[in-house]
Length: 360
Image (cartoon, rainbow, N blue to C red):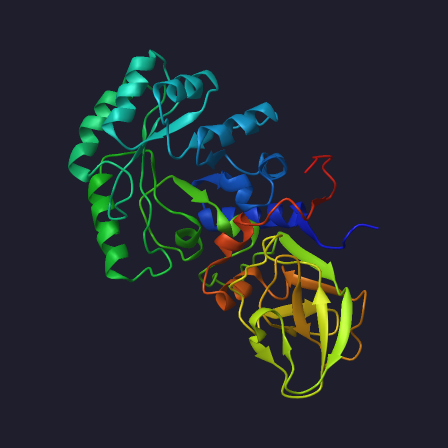
């Protein structure tokens, strides 16, 4: 019998989240971000489920977009990093993808390709300072790209601090954005946090990523609720009793202060459970939450089940998804849920509910 550790992907929950977020979007068009294999959830299966509910998809790189096209995804796909070479520009055109352009050399590649693109998005740097044209350079870029696109070009930017809508940085970006887009019809600024946090920006497109999968770094307005799409599950493989003063795991970080029952769970950082998890990181069970104790190993984690005698070998546990949420676990690891779900490995199988027939 195979190891009981697995990731379950709840596609109906994904679709419910999309419906919830579309209500927040109002009249704005919605773009589902499925980069990094849909944040670890399986890009093809998620895109297939979301296709009837959204207006377009976004990925980071061209290879991710091609994989979706090969799987039969027909909706528009925005390549957020745009081309990385002249050859990329040619493939983007041949595959009817939308490039996001952030530099002059990318414009040169598009011009040299001799192709026409259905739509081109222009990245504007309003304060993130990673990619994009500075506000004074946007007009010329838009002029050059307009002749290469069969539709109006779209101006886009990205919040650097969307979780803090009243921060000086957010206010500065919004001010620059409003000035930049005063005469533009097609624009996109809001990501997940800006949408759920209801930051008011001039735009007719929103880009939904992490929130689609049930995570959020901001509090949603009532009565909106998002459902976790990924559940990381296993079962207790071993239980032992240790005396007060005995330690658990590498380095003896956690030491029992009483006679304790220790459960070993067959999942570890080799599956994507973070080694940075500290003692007390919650693990869910049908009888209540148990604390993780001792350093995470490559293949195992340990938990203190002294206070829940009902738990024993074979008892199911939830490492994240529901209780605890992935955001809760991430907080115990001094990171964010985005990192946890995108770092899962292929050792533990992903099972899609309902079964899509997609082989993972």
